[in-house]
Amino acid sequence: MTTRLDCVVIDSLDPVALAQFWSEVTGWPIVMEEPDEVAVEPLSDADDGIALVFVPVPVPKTAKNRIHLDVQSASLQEQVEIVDRLHALGAVRVDVGQRAVPWTVLADPEGNELCVLEPREEYRDTGPIAAVVMDAIAPTMLATFWSAATGWPVTRGGPHFSAMRSGTGRGPYLELLRAMDTKVVKNRLHLDVAPLAGDDQAGEVERLRSLGATFADVGQGDVPWVVLADPE
Image (cartoon, rainbow, N blue to C red):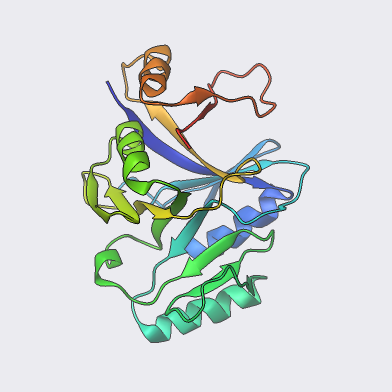
C-alpha cells in the first residue's frame, strides 16, 4: 500500500485572486472555481507539475510559512524577467534572513513566500515549479516519512537537506530544508495525499500513523478526508 502526492493546498483570503496570480506564475489554467475551492493545474497529465488548490480561510497570514514554492528559471535573464513580471502582478520582495543569495525571495499578494531561482541544471526539466520546499528540524528523518507518504524516492540529501521526486522523473521536487524554528501556527500551505486506486483510505491513514503521523483538528468538522500532522 502507498499514497500519492495529490496537490498543494493554499489557504487564501481571496482564493480566486490568488489562483489568478499563481496561474500567471505557472502558465497553468484555472480548471475549477467553486465557492470553497479553486484549482490551478498543468494543462494535461503529460505536463510537468502538481495541482495548486486554493481554499478560503478568514484569517490572514501572521508568520513565515514553513512550506513555500520555488519557481524555476532557464537563464539569468529569464530570472530577472520572471521577477519583474511577478512584481507587476502584485508580488513584493521580502527578507526572511536569506542574505546574499542568487535566488530572489518574493511574497505573493497574500504574503506567501516564494523563491525565483537562478538557473540550475537539476531543475531544468521540472516545469515552472521547481520544488515544494518544507522547513524541517530533522530533514533526513522527515524525508523518510514523506517518501512513504508520497511514494517518491529520496534522490539526494545530507544532514541539512533532503530531496525526493516522483519515480517518473518529471515534475517538481519535494525538498526538506533544515530550519530550527518550530511550528507555531497552522500551515497556510499543506500537502494532500491520496490512496492509489483500489487502496483503502482508512488503511492508509493507519499506515501513516504507524510512521509517526498524528490526528489533527484544524476545525475541519465532518468531512470525508482525514487531517493528519507529520512527525514534526
